[in-house]
Image (cartoon, rainbow, N blue to C red):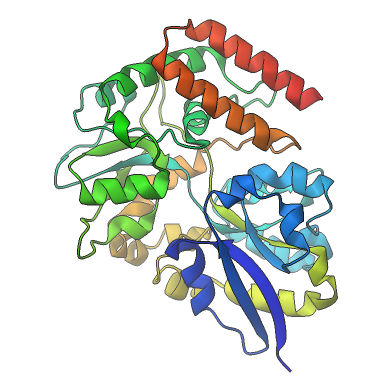
Length: 363
């Protein structure tokens, strides 16, 4: 007898096509879709009562845990399965779903902010933000949470004691202001998908830091193929550039507790390496499985996306995930947008952001 589950994913071919294409002989999942913006705008507790499986991103975990919207993965899957999936996952995707001593989702899709460009218009992508300043035809992704996420990618504190590395944050705001002043500001409302579409169809050359979509490595009838490079380096001493981790995970809600055997069967099949290599990647998914990112065949199929960005993924900044973070993330992005257009002292702005972050974090 086939067990029926209900799931919710996001409304882009990268988010829904792999799930539509994958099937299991004993388990059927009806997948609904929500806009990309729904990750930040729709509380998971509102969805948990309607769905067994949720494709989520990690920054909302704190609020979801507080609301009891998710089951710990240890309550659903065996220790052997979890160890296997952890070993296969691209770092730091697995770690991003660990909070309060438990895992709350399984890495499904991996992404970070990298440089994207039109290879037919830009022979050499910028290696540093100083290089970006010399380029015409640049656009920044500042819509929604993305202005703040750029700052975090460039200057997020890795010690866990602060939100921002002060020196880096001041330097980041200074260079972002300079780039913004000469960039194409009329596209400020575009999210990462819109930025990819714009570069593929318009006259611009480059977006130096935006979440990457391997899906756009193939040309379409009305769109050129895009290419990627590592995130630009901020400071002269940097060996690599940094971005903020994105991607998604597969979470199980309490509604599915009575169907955990079906959930386990389905998940084993979906996360199987062969499924990820041969099905998920083939239809435009962006797997969180290391074998996919290291596959020359997959890399060639998507115009070098994986080899160009794997190092940036591995070095990615993982956002805070406490209850209340999403609201602060929105506020942070609004502040960064304001700072791009004014002449406030960046150091004073960073200090104020840090003070407000501490108040939200510490309650």
